[in-house]
Image (tube, rainbow over the protein chains, first blue to last red):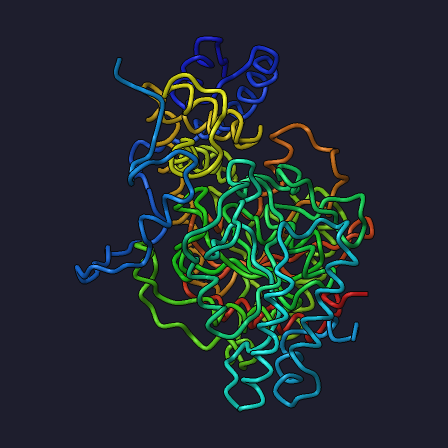
Amino acid sequence: MKITEQDLKNISLLSKIKIDEETSDSLIKDLESILTMVNKMDELDTSKINPLTHPIENTQTLREDIIKKDIEREKLQELSKEKESGFYLTPKVIE
Amino acid sequence: MSELINLSLTDQIIGLADKSFSSKEITGAYLNEIKKKESLNCFISVFEEESEEKALMADENISKNKARPLEGIPIAHKDIFCIKDKKTTCGSKMLSNFISPYSSEVFSKLDTAGAITLGKTNMDEFAMGSSNETSFYGNVLNPINEKLSPGGSSGGSAAAVRANLCSFATASDTGGSIRQPASFCGVTGIKPTYGRVSRWGMIAFASSLDQAGIIAKNAKDAAIALKYMSGFDRKDSTSLNEEVKDLQKEVDADQEHVIGIPKGLIENIKNVQVQDSFKNAISILEKDGAKIEEINLPHIEYSLPAYYVIAPAECSANLARYDGIRFGHRSESVSSLEDLYVNSRTEGFGREVKNRIFIGTFCLSAGYYDAFYNKALKIRNLIKSDFDEAFKKVSSIAMPTCSDSSFELGSISDPIEMYEQDIYTIPANLAGLPALSIPSGTADEMPIGLQLIGNYLEEGRILNLANKFQKLTDFHEFK
């Protein structure tokens, strides 16, 4: 399986992680060898098999709709470096 | 007091109850040993003062006959489990400043049972790795031979148990992260059935595969620890609402066993020492009365490729939450929102984590979803069906835990070679089955493990079989 420079750009864009030029060659090598290993799956005909997303068949359990104060907003927001009046701050998005 | 740290959990519980020693003594002894063996790098954080205070409280409870089941027992948690008001790093720079606002269910349950948390153990970054070398905090050393890897990702937990730094340690297993380090360090490790232990507050890697478990000195100790960690939790939507069996009782019960060996498995074990030790282990169990049956797992060889699509796909989705805004590493060099996302993630994640996010992103992207992700899910179904069929005639399945014993730190740079570490352990995660590793011999003077896989919710049966094996052998004794 071949990975092109364009593939790498798409992956970088979608995952929001920068790929610097110095590492891109070795990254392509790693990704290609992983995908080549993964391609072994093609040996199997799975056209009549259903996909299994989860190992356990479990019915979603619902809980009572009761307000609890397990985690407080203020405590959660302490974890952010930039916040103000209960809001999280980011760089400006509207000019 | 150094002999206290050599005791098994079972003996520590007895000794505390009959007041042969106090929790203060045993906790102090472990804290000393942790300091003495700091160079092993087993711990990311140690809670010295708090442990000492809790030990005094435990001794008071014991003296008032109010002892809880694990009262005063010093343990360690893998740094993947959140503990309220404590740093929880998951071995990553991304979470190096993360003070958890809540506690994981695993911590809460063991804390409620009376255990004392000595500290949090080192691990591969976000549990992605098989050598502990991807940790932002540096790798752990194998206590048996410090040039070698302790395995991963729960290398800190396995090495801490082996080095007598705690009675037992919690760990997590997505593709072998409990069993492989247990094998490399000569200790006992169990990953229970998917859903048996709550994942609430355990930092997610691949949610349909992740399961919390235990690393301990022997099967009996693991059974006790797991008993107090298991159970239904409404906060985890995949938690199983099933009765928790008394594993402590079951581990010692008189049970009959039918052990399945996959057809062609033994001939295909390349390492002769691993092959011989496996055959030896099976013959020991057979002589003890277990029946041996050949079983068919025709699709098991597709486990590794299917896993390396499913796990990265789920990882790329789970790790999308690290955006630098609400918690975790936030980049300083930022001029736009896009910069904030990209720079925080680029600076915060290490190479292996990035590789897995890239693979997952690629496999889930338009045009590739069916060929990779959907295909892998179909293979997952075939693998699960193979196991369902096999468990109609056997009560457990035996395999080696790993192809080899531990390797030198820094000696594996090829990702595929590293991924192949988990070739025997991944199938149980894909099917959600309980599986454990117990020491069963050595290769190149380092321990190797025997893996026992059980049917759904039958961790008691494999623990029972493991306990039988440990009564007949001394591979699990620390020499």
